[in-house]
Amino acid sequence: MRALTFISFACLATACGGKPAESPSRVPAPSAEPAAKAEEPAPAPAAPKIPTECASRSGDVCSMPKDFVDRLCDKVRISMALVLFQKGTPWTHGFLSRKTDAWNAEGGATSQGTIDFGEEVLLMKSSIPPKGGMQVSGMGGYQALRWDGSCVTLTSDEVVMRPPTAVKHPRIDVRFIDDGVLEALRKDEKVNAAFMARRKECKGVGVGDVSKKCVELDQKLGDVIVNFVEETGGLPDPAQLP
Image (cartoon, rainbow, N blue to C red):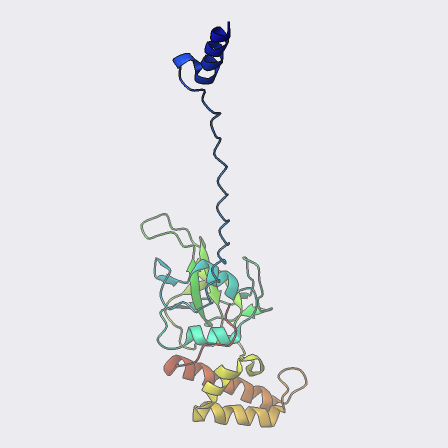
C-alpha cells in the first residue's frame, strides 16, 4: 500500500512519463503607439507678382492670367496701369472705335461716364471666337484696362487694333499714384516740370472749382506722363500689388 502511494505521488510529480505541463503562454505587451507626427506648417502663399508673359493667346491678344485680372480689377489701380502700359511689356494695345459707356460686366470697380473715340486701352483678355470660326459683328469682346487704372468691358466692334490719328487717354490723377512710381516719373525733367507747374496752379486741388489753366496743366501733365511711360518706361513695381 505504501508502495502504491509512492508510485501515485511519483506519477503526479512527473506526469507518469508524459510531457511536462505547459505554462500558460505569455501575451506580448501591446507595443507603444508611434509618436504622432508634428504637423508640418502650411506653405506660405506665393508673393504677388506682376506677370511678364502671355498666359495665353486668343487671336491677336496676349492675355494676362485670369486670377491676376480678377484681382487687378477689384479696385481702380492707376499705378498698376502705368506699369502695365510701359514700354517693353508684351500686352496688346487697342483703341476705341467709337464713344461708348464705361462699364465692367465682370464686376469690380470702374470709372463712371463714357470712353471717348480713340482712347487707348490694354486688352487683358479676349472672348473673341478664333479665326476660321463663325464671326458675327459685336460677338465676343474684351476685358480692358484704361490709363486711369479702371477696368472696362468692350465688345469686339468697339475696339480696333490700329491707332487713330489722335490717340486719347482719360485723366490721370497724380494724387493717387504710388510714391515710388511718382518719384521715378519725376526724375524725368519734362514730367517734373509739368508736375510742378500743375501743382503751383491747382494748389493741390484736382477737380471741382479750379481755374481753366489748372485744367489745361492737369491735361498736359497726363500727356507728358503717357509719353514717358510709353517711350521710356523703367518704372518700379507699386508698393501694393493685386
